[in-house]
Amino acid sequence: MTRRLTLGGLLLLALLLETTVLDYFSIRKVEPDIVLLLGVFFALFNGPAKGALFGFIGGLAQDLLVGQFIGINALTKMVTCYLMGKVEQRVYKDHVLVPAGFLFLASIINEVLFYLIGRMAGLSIEWTGAFNRVILPLAIYNAVLAPLFYNLFYRSHTRGWLKKQEY
Amino acid sequence: MVVFRTWRNLIIIAAIVTGIFTVIIATGKDRPGLTWPERILKDVLAPFQQGLMTVTQKGHAAWETVFSWGEVQDENALLKKQVQDLRERVNQLEEMQMENLRLREALNYRDGNKSEMHLEGASVIAREPRNWFRSIIINKGSSDGIAKNMPVVTSQGLVGHVTAVSANTSSVLLILDNTSAVGSLVMIQMNRIPGVLEGYDRSGYLKLKYLNRDAKVRKNQKVITSGMGGIFPKGLPIGKVVDINFASDGLQKYAIVKPFVDFDRLEEVFVIKQVLAAPGLEGGDLN
Image (tube, rainbow over all chains, first blue to last red; front, side, top):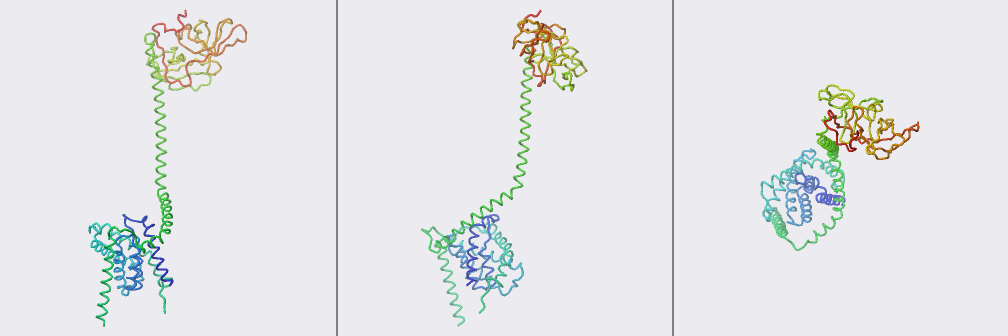
């Protein structure tokens, strides 16, 4: 129960930060996607199914706040977190560069999916501009931020509120 | 069994994705209103968002202030320097304006007296640092034709006379000096009462001595040079009577005269090199 509440609280906090504070931390009008960051961290420790579920809920919450193209973030984050969860057992999660690499990769996948689905749903975005101005800078920004929060998440997951219940 | 499960999973995923796609496309257009999950989420987050935004904005403003502190200091220093520069400039311009007025006045004086006197304009370059004499140094000397005993005037009136000459400078003893009385007989303008003028106790006023006890001397009368004494031509304005007293012997009286020339602000003067004709005496013929 504590674990779920903590996850819910973290998700709400991420949404709050994204809609308020992060506006002041945007670099070249790009803000980091900390819901994705949270989803990828979660998937790395909990596998594809739970990761996909977290990604879906987090993405859906983002969509509901934006109020347009509802489901687009839910879908992209679900797929991205699923894929990140899939490689969970194959990586050594203690190294600080691992989350940075994962976040970079996850951001690229997530944003490319967003672009493709957006195009299908009627968004008119030009690829070069989208990649240069959004996808790549966002991936770098997320990758840089990842090591800063990873230790906290890691500790909470091994010893703190996010630790799995053992039956 | 495994095949069945795979197919089932695929169908479920396809259904979910299709469902999501439908929602994405449906919500991509303008909608009449928000759905209940959207309303709940927005309403739950709103107070927190507001609080966080307020804190963030204040923090950001404080950060901006701190961040731009150096810039503000630089700007302040620059503005202070500009203010100082502009102040100096204004002072210079005011000085120039004053000089312009003085020179214009001097020029008028010179032009007005062209037919009567041969004048040489000069600037005061120093005041002699002597306690017992009141004299100035001007920037014209013997190379400009200046000679000892030549009278010095401004457009306001008499200044003094040349006491020493070098090639490029001259010393001028002011009429304020106690020793300048030598040979400077003066007249009270309307009544033609002669007297001798000298400095009065270093007060900036002049003392007109040896006036007859019965002389009709009144306040505000104008005092001019008489032409007697060999130094000053007649008719140069000196000042006006501000007080009259009896001398200690009781037989004579004296008048205190306030000079027309402001000796504290003496900057440009004229040396009378030659008197061509009797100056336009406001007091008429003195002889």
